[in-house]
Image 1 (tube, rainbow, N blue to C red):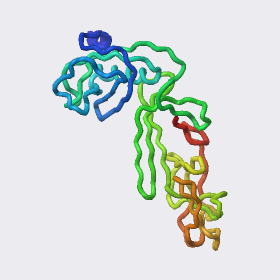
Image 2: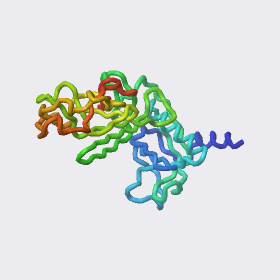
Image 3: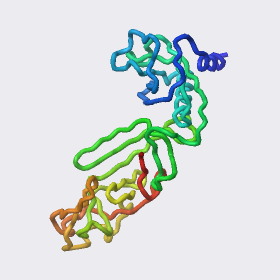
Image 4: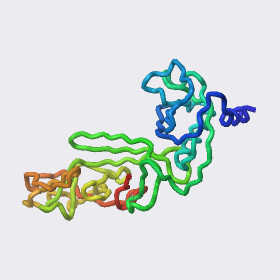
Length: 263
């Protein structure tokens, strides 16, 4: 009986239901999901909704109904279906965002997402999914770019793609070519990416003497600025840098040997 009630609520549209529209944004915030549709709301919005959240909807992931609706939303994004929303006419999961009572999909058959920001493998041809949100973090040493996407072909959960980058990597070649080195220990399980050279890498797992930069003795050290691709003299000889270890190139499980492409 409980299962029947959930099914019915997902597909029964009331007078406050919205016509089918594509999803513009989808975010998971702890136990709640918020989403925005391309088509603006046309019904009377509950008084509890704040001015900044007029076009947002919320659902609760702690309920079976909420989990089912979230699954439908991910499917809608990955297959580019249109979403119909029925309002609960109140705020619940989040204090100032309108609660969605029910969701249904309007089938739109396509072979792949045809709009928005798309994520491709490093070959630039193999489509992985549609990007829903992105975030960026950085300081003087480190960068992290994160993308949340809906996989192509349908899925019940969104996936994450994160890029970890050192601001600089080091060489003993004045053109920053050949063997590269890092002053940070990087494991194969969380490989880093060089934007300037378009490869993924980690440092030697059990480095031998030959894996260290200092074996190059009096050779001058050069720094590759990963954001700009500029190669400049670092100031110092290789023998002075006893912690820098050689990079090992690796294939990324999602992107391949080259960086994923977002366009």
